[in-house]
Every structure is written in structure tokens, then in C-alpha cells.
Image (tube, rainbow over all chains, first blue to last red; front, side):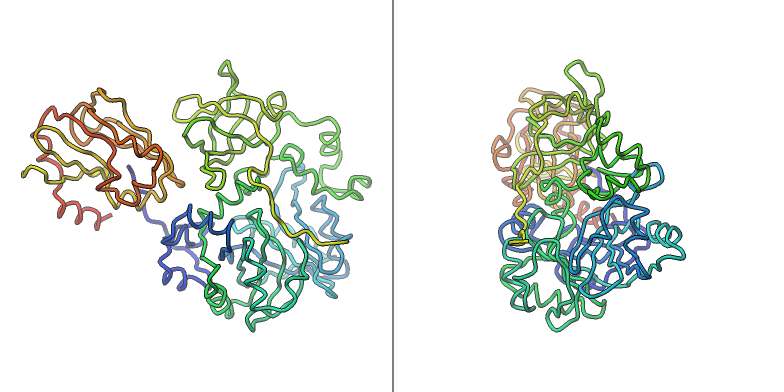
Length: 376
Length: 126
């Protein structure tokens, strides 16, 4: 086997020393040195999160406040999400689009209770470009203020019980709701959200508080620290897109299966980037579609792998693949010509020059277990 | 070299020979680098290969890696337990996590591989 070479100068999150102390294997990720796994290993970390609770350091994510008279309206020029309609304490998954309707990034936008500014969380690799783009395009109507804050994610069926020991009222915070809460004595922006398909929380903290809060949560019996390896296998099983892999500047939100992020009001108004093209795609369909794939053999598909039909003709490409520890089998997602996108369709993935049979399956591969809010 | 002594390759395979037959697997270092092993694709019994040839593939949650023949030989047995329990490669890489047994073609090739001490030094330099 071959071993990758060491990496150049990397940034560190406020939890770096804690990761090292916990025995993490550190790897480069989006310019940061991050834990790929801890001594438990990726499979145990993954299964532990699905069964109990896992703590993730996602401080590499970019956080910002967008302030001004009407920041939601300003940002709506760059996304088809309904941001003006965000109620106090509500968070929404949204796409940042370029002028041709390609996805510049996927991000979270939230309106904190009784605050006018929008709270934004974007991907690490795209942070600088996103912030420059948003600042430039909203010049005069809104002001982007990047925040140097840490971000933790506590995910899993025990997340609520664990967090309730360190913060008040977390039981009442519904899925995709957000508020300012004190967590283990530290001021936090707490949302009920995540990237695992499980119930859970994301906790934005001042950098100086991050290690203390992380240690408090890790001190709970149900909680294990979780690295990037399991973060990726958890989100893949949950059918969630990884920016730069499953979606990028060339991807149509419609082909990606993300048309649900287009607000109803926005569809009627058709007032977002490349609206004409995207609305046409929405009604007439796209050439390719993102699908879930189950491989029949004990072989792992990798990103970039060609997808072919029974005659060996190229019909698509794998964008994410790996072993699904909860599924107990190799899984993948990718884009295929619509003729092959129906559930149950058999096709082949090329892995190391061999055609491996796979079936198109619905996503998520593992059912989501979000805590949906009652009543509303 | 002594019978039963383990030798190591630069591509992180180990080989333990006794009476013209040898057992092959991947080193603890390799297993740790790979992370949790999920599949092992083993060679057919009877397959012949030359030193450096690709004999097996090991897939972990992180990557697929090819396993190369440390010396010339012919596969006589494979560790079929690995298909149901690939985690053995992580738990005991240089014991129960062995990959295959082989008949040696050229015993002298073994002498060219690293001793345990040499391999330990080699890994330190990586």
C-alpha cells in the first residue's frame, strides 16, 4: 500500500490541542488541520453517533452576520431561498447561486429572535469567495461581518438529553430553529440542525469558550468525539450533498434534487439568479439527476468513477462513494442521465477498470430522525 | 535468515516463511494508516505472481489499497475468515489478519526484505 505525503502549513481550530490530546489522527481539510478519526475509528464513531451522541468540531465553517436595513432581501438576489419569510428563530438551508444558476455554495441562513441581522454559516473551502461575493453584491444594502467563532455539532439520539444537562430549554427548540442560549456557562448561538440525518444541535461559540464547552459535553457518558471520516459517512447515508463533490458551480440545483430550497414566493416571482433557466428545468426536467446507488459487490465506488449502462456507454459519474456503516454495504451518489434515474434501475459503476453492478435507490440510505417541531 | 522470522517490504507487507511456504499480510503500520478495513479482495488459490505484482486489494473506509507480492510465489491458501470479518486486519494485522499463504519460488528473495528492526526504522523515516 502507499502512504500519502505530509501536508503544508495548516490553520488550527480552537480545539486543536484537545483533538491531539484525545489521540486524533490529524489530516489536512480545507486549509485546516482536522481530526480524521479518533482512536475508536471511523466505523465505531459513525455507529456511536447513530446510537448515542457524537461531538464534531466544525469550526472550519465560515460564520458571518449580514446586517443592514433588510439583509434578507439583499441576500435573496443571490439565492432562490425565501429568506424574507424567515421568522424569528428560524433557520433555512439555502443555495448561493452564480449568475448562470450554478451552485457557488450551500449554506445556512437564520434569523435570530428579535435581531435584524441574518446569521450565515458557509463551507470552509468556499468561505472567502462567498463572503467576497456576498459583500460585493449587497454593497449599499447590507453589510457582511465575518465572525471568528468556533462551531461544535452534537449529533445523535442522545444529543438532546446530553445538552439539556448544560443548557436550558433545549427540548423546546424544534428542528431548524435557532436562538441565543447559554451552554455550559458560555454564550452560544444554538440551532437544532446538523449533517448526519440524526437529531442534534450546532453550537456556535466564542473561540475562547470552545474547549471548555467541548470538554463538558465530552464528559458525558453518551458522547464520543467524531472525526471527519465518520462525518462524511454519516452525511452520505443521510443523502446530503457535500459541496465541491456532489454539487459545484456547474451543478443545477434542479439536477441536484435541491429544488425544494426554492421558496414558493420566489418561484412565483422568478426573481433569483438564472430564474428563467431554472424554472424551465423545474418544469421540463434536466438531462441528468442526482441519485443514490447501492453496489451489489463488496467493492467501494469512488468519486469520479464512470457510470455506464449495460452496453458500457457512459451515462453518468459518481460524486461520492464509500462504505455505509449503518447500511452495512457500499453506497454512492452520483449523476445519471434521467432515463436511468428511476429507483430500481440497474447500471454499472467502473471501479479499477471493472464494471460493478449497482441499483438506483431512494435517498436517504438511512431514514432521517430529525426532531420535527409539533403543531406549527 | 531464520525459519519463522518475519520480513517486511517497503510497501508495508509482512511475510513469514517456514519450510518453503510463507504467510503474507499487511503491517500494523499499514493497517493503522488504512483505518477500518471493510473489504479484502483475496487472490485465487493457485494464482502465481512475481515479486511486486498486485495480489490483493484491501478497502478501508478511507481508501482502496493494492497489496503487492513481497516475493515470487504461488497462492496455496487464503484467509477466508476475512470476508466475513475484515476488522481482523485492524485488530491483529500481523496475526489473525493474515491475507494468504504461498509456496515460495525463490527463497533467496526473502533475504532482500527488511528485518523487523529495519522496517521499524524505515517507518520512522516516513
